[in-house]
Structures are given as structure tokens and as C-alpha cells.
Length: 327
Ligand SMILES: NC(=O)c1ccc[n+]([C@@H]2O[C@H](COP(=O)([O-])OP(=O)(O)OC[C@H]3O[C@@H](n4cnc5c(N)ncnc54)[C@H](OP(=O)(O)O)[C@@H]3O)[C@@H](O)[C@H]2O)c1
Image (cartoon, rainbow, N blue to C red; front, side, top):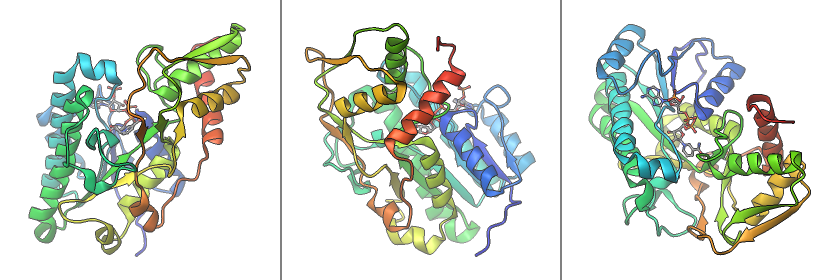
């Protein structure tokens, strides 16, 4: 089937790290009719505004990459805001996309939908098999609701209205557009900032919390954007071959994980920091391993392209370009 590069595509959350990467990739592929709204122009928790937007614009496709996101501290401090805003954004966008005649929608979830003690690597069918990690449970519940909304609209309106709403679950992402806030950022942007600051101040060592032995998986954001467009464009038979009507989400991971100590050394290399790296073993480690099973997506023909070293140096240049730091 040939692709219509003039179809109208709405990317929700286009100012964010993932949304902006999806827009870049769509533009690079030749899509000409991409529509966006900033948070200030349209608050996606506002049902009246979202309804009016879909009535007026009537897009053909929607990428739902807007979400209220944050680290452990933010999730713990604002649990009501996290569950309310994410549920509202999903309910408003998915429902009014349907009412507005949208046939194809891609919802972005997160690996935190899986139980805290899910077997590793975490496969799609681990969903709803156990208790969630308590720190981000409200956020995870909202993400699970998003998957179940897509499935429910497919089941009720798939045949009658041609609705085909899909979901992807990314592992930890990093890259251009990341949040480098000193206290409230994910592990890679936090390490980039710390190693950069250690380099420019000639610090003798950088101390990392924990033993450095937990393993985590990281995917460059352009790979995530490519996977999102790949899944959106997959023909229905292919998508159905790896999913079930009530188990329809696909994991998106790099394919392998590394220890925090290995990651720290890789970030030190990318930033040019050559001092010591120490581990404060009195601090907690978190889960020993968090790794996605991406074999379904791999079998469909997609795999990550950007190796960690390459991704980290691109992320570091983005940090230098966009953060007001001493070079
Ligand atoms: N980053 C990761 O490591 C990671 C990992 C797994 C899954 N994901 C998922 O990927 C998706 C995108 O994440 P991201 O890292 O790109 O997040 P991000 O950089 O924070 O982008 C999210 C975007 O959503 C917008 N937004 C938030 N609330 C809104 C509202 N009420 N109305 C309109 N827009 C709103 C934000 O605008 P403002 O900034 O103006 O509020 C921002 O532009 C999320 O669903 C997230 O769960 C991300």
C-alpha cells in the first residue's frame, strides 16, 4: 500500500522530547501536513478545547505523545496531578479523535505499566499480572487506562468505523530535547550534567549513588520516533500477527541493557570527563534489572539503530547547545 504524504497528522506533545523527534522524522520522510498545538494553545485536559480542535481540524492520524511526566520525586509529590492530567489527556484525545473520525492513532505509554516484579526481560503479556511499583503507580494506572481505551475503541468501533488505535511502550529514552534539570531529571541527562560540570571545574571525582550494578536499558529518542512511525504504518495484518485485541501494545527497547557503572563510564567518555568515578554503596540501588522484551517489534522488522556511544555524544552536544552552562 502506498503512503499518503499529504494526510493530516496531529502530533500531540510536539514540544516534548519524543513528540519533537516524531515531527522531525515525519518531516524528513516527506509528510507535508503535520499539525500541532502547544500546551498554551490547547490544554489537552480541557475537554471543550479538545472537542473543538478535532471538530475543526479533523486529522487523519494522531500521535499521542503528550503526557504529564516526571521522575520519582515529582510522581511522589504530585500523584493526584499525575493521574488526573494523564487520564484526562488520554480520554479527551482518544474519544474526540474517534468522534472526529480519526481512524489511526498511536498512544505512547511507558515501561512502568509492568509489575514491579515482572520477569526480565518484561514481555507484553506481563501487563496486569502483579502489583505496580508504588512510587509511580498513579501514572502507570493512567498509562494502562490509555492502552485499554485504545483496545476498547478498536473492539467496539473497529469493524463499524474502521478504528485502528495502537500503543507502544518505550523503555528509558534520552537524546535531544531531554530535561537536564539538576534535581528532577532521568539518569542519562542527570549524568551528562554532572560529568560536564565535573569536567569544567576539574573535579577529582564524581560520586554515583548505589553500587553501580543495577542494569537498565536506554533508547535514543530518534529510534523511538522511528519505531512510533513504523508501528503506525504497519499494515493491520502484520500488527495483528503480534498482538491480541485485549493485549495490543508493543514494547520498544534497545534490545540489551547495561549496568549503571558501564553507563557512567560511557557518559564520562562522551562528555570528556577523565577523573575518578566512585560509588556510594550506602545509597539504595532500586530494582536490579529493568529490561524490555522487544522481540515482537523486532519480528515485525524494526530494530534500534543508534548505539549508546553515538547517542550519548549527540545528547551531549544538545545539552551544550540548549542548556546555559559553562563550556
Ligand atoms: N522520556 C522517557 O524516558 C520516556 C520513557 C518512556 C515513555 N515515555 C513516554 O513518552 C511520552 C512523551 O514523553 P517525553 O519524554 O517526550 O515527555 P516531555 O518531554 O515532557 O513532553 C511531553 C509534552 O506534553 C505536553 N503536555 C503535558 N501536559 C499537557 C497538557 N495538559 N496539554 C497539552 N500538552 C501537555 C508538555 O508540554 P509542557 O512541557 O508545556 O507541559 C510536553 O511538551 C510520554 O507519554 C511518556 O510517558 C517517555
